[in-house]
Length: 434
Image: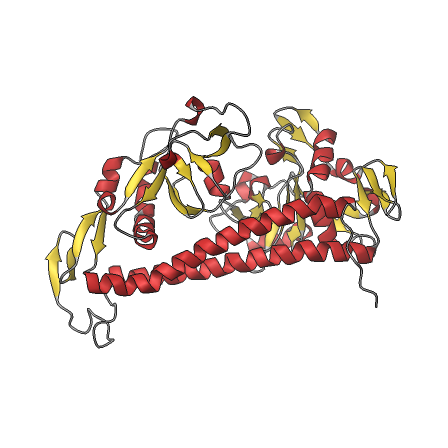
């Protein structure tokens, strides 16, 4: 296989080195006014809502249906490619201009805000999926960052900057073949995500049935409480006979992390990435994550499947599946010598909204909870017979969720390792002949 030199480096001889202006159009978003926004309606997609590889509806603002109809030119459709045109710092690729997301939300009408661009591929020149993956590569992101204007703290690109970028361009059949490999991996990742959402809903439904409604199956297979099951008084009100109330920190240990700046690595080899709130939220560490010494006490080492509770700032509870790392302060590693993960996970999750409200009430810039809040949070522990019965139902659900998350991290690593090789022609894809 022979290669040739071009603006993007060495590419296969039969590929083209093409300016994006030959392949795409770019639509910039509309500058909505603050008076346009209402409590609920049509979501406006801003830069903060581009969360690669997708688009998020978390913390969105809304406009009326009438304004949506008036500004239909800026409508966003399923599978549209969106790109951020302003970044906080173009020296940091994770927050740079050029951040790309693919719209995978079918159920909602949405509009494009200013400083967000919609990339429209020209048919019969570039495949939409291939274009998306190419824009997601580090190489294209880097070229966009270099072309950005503005200050180091406020970098900007415009449609002209985007169109002036060169990309390697195979034939359309090879583009489709490359995109098919990558999209197949992404589809499997999305299937796992949907399975986990379903499993989480099932686990929460079972939890409510057992620990809130007390309608778990009795010996005859009938709902316990409504079938006349014996209830006794407790500090939480009436609970099934033989069950008991404990504090949340009685059933699990909440280990706070270390101030990892005090444990720097001697070298990159003898180090762990640091798990902070940012990493927990995104589900993985990256090149911008801090690193710490791998000689820290073993109890502060986080492995796949460990339950982590962010108790300060953005409060959340999740199983970490992003490989081994060191636990930073402001995060609890939640474990128990007596109870399995499903039990302390669901009970911590049960109290999470209350913890969030407590944190919001703190008169600080970074709300948090205290250990007393864990002690004040109550847990209902079933009698042994019922405990083993629900454990046999829920524990496999939680284990399956963890397994799917670990599988997804492996698929993401495979996709991310293939992406630059496929896009540069280092790995070629066989093309099926008709």
